[in-house]
Image (cartoon, rainbow, N blue to C red; front, side, top):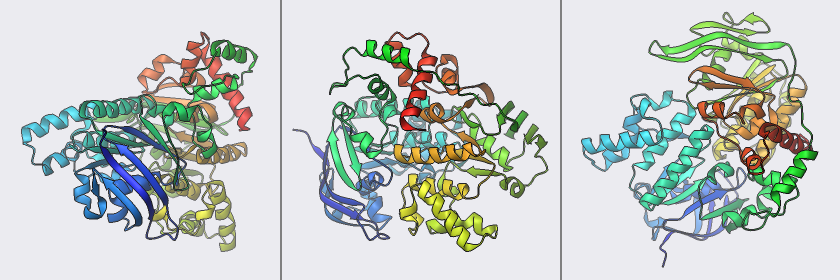
Length: 560
């Protein structure tokens, strides 16, 4: 008989700062050794559910609950957060909030030190764990100086050394490049199989998590569990589309081709139907011509002489572009954003805006024409209330309060935050906070908007709302630059992709050519999309054209 490791019975939960319950009548049993994925739209209660399991909801947020919750057979009413931490290891959505050590090595070793592991054994365990997640080269670096993806790898290494029964991953892929995300899923799977851990994953990137087998998928919406079933059962239904969670792209392509998909995720005569659809579908010309608005000329940058981040980087951004900057974690993508905004100055080379060198322009001068949305929302937020945070930039500029209210409300509606306009920010999920920071920049109407991982932590519905709003801005002449790992975003919305690897520009081309180029994919830590795999399975030789036709058709269906 399987042992019950997590048991919710008639469980409801409310944050102290809210009047309504975030979780409503949860009944859920998870068994020892299971690997379970929890999905649902932003704000549906996924993170709150995990915070109840690890105790954060009670001991940090002072939440109130009814019903019962048992972890490893013990009622949480009888446990404190330290005792729960001995049973549940957590990788948070925001890695900065859980760093302890001054260096990567110290942070990974923290739990081992608490458990009085000998120094020799500790060094070996930390070394092995850091190598598994490809962070060993930064073992002596401060975790706070790493890129978002590198920070996430440190957190993964930290929980992999921990002898706990349950490992809980809250958006573990949010900051990882595609190839590293794939490796992370493989590492989680290896930990589960070799150590018989119970694994809970909360993640929007469903297609990436399905790279390895899952026992069950729990679907949440509006604080309730609406489905608890196997992956195949779920993917053959329409539940995901109804609540705004993206299904794998290959399934969408099969449906566009008229294939009926059964509960085993098989489709009869799918090769013939896909080829027939491909022959009839039309390609799109995704290229744009325009005046250069931003240009990098042989830009180099380094923090120290020993560590050069950017090496002779040159590329152009045309006015009206929707451009993505992609590449492996630590390649220098976020550094480019900070150089444009004036937070850093190039070691050598020039950055031109409208043909003029920006070397003498202050951060304030640049902010009048360039808006920057940072990767970590907590590094941007300075106000307690949502409305005040979004209004801050307008008020600093002396805008009339009535105009402020009108513009803030307009942007909050677009970003799906209007219903929360009077909420405190600390009551929001990480993904909702991300939308607050995007709204605070969008409200200022800059000429160029740079967004660092704009879709990280966003469900499909809000991802689409934000991106469609950016498209509308783009149609009005606003240039959009997105630093992103999201290959779906690149395919659906951008007309050009600049790919970085090891501080250099590896390629610059339209997205469908980038994401079907095996050499670029390998060197930049990207990965082939399921669309390309489908094309290969259907013996379509021009996979780039197949991807192009799918994206063109998908845009027409969704009216992008």
